[in-house]
Length: 247
Image (tube, rainbow, N blue to C red; front, side, top):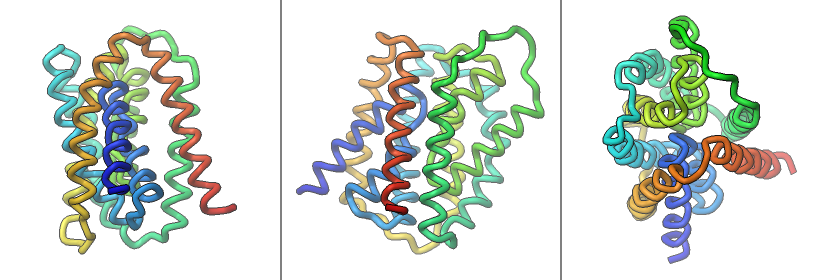
């Protein structure tokens, strides 16, 4: 019963992040599945990808109805990350828990610091294809290696590199997350990872409901306020994970 309650609560938080910010679901889901529910890291990463994929598809539908998904840009951005996601996903199962935990904490901390930096004014003009491709490839590698959708990195990349308005960056990020997560799941198929559906099913259901609320709340708050709140949450997660390893 305790695991079920924890899965429901954590799922709601993950859904709020995905629906409201267009990312952050995986970076919260993996530590929740590992530290709160007790899944082994490899199982938690695969479970996180399933949860994030299904929740992102649901959230993407709502943002698409509002016209906040730039399909061509999102598809091109995600395409650059498919192969890195597949390669990194195949390697992740052979890496030690310590390495994955430290890498995860480092990525979470970096993302938080980027969110806390003032966003530059959106510049007119075309995006730089080389930088967009590099960002998409790096995002795919992070997705495959750490089991996160990458939205917490995709949103600033889409907003700053490709000059999308924040709400469109959030909506388009969900498309990128969905594609990257599916690619990473494909790399993990048949690897013998145990999937605890008694945890995954309620976690996903709560996340889908939370994503709807997150989208609604995001419409009431400024983008800067949402980013700062989430950045502080990421910093706390990174600190707790490092403390668990080294203290």
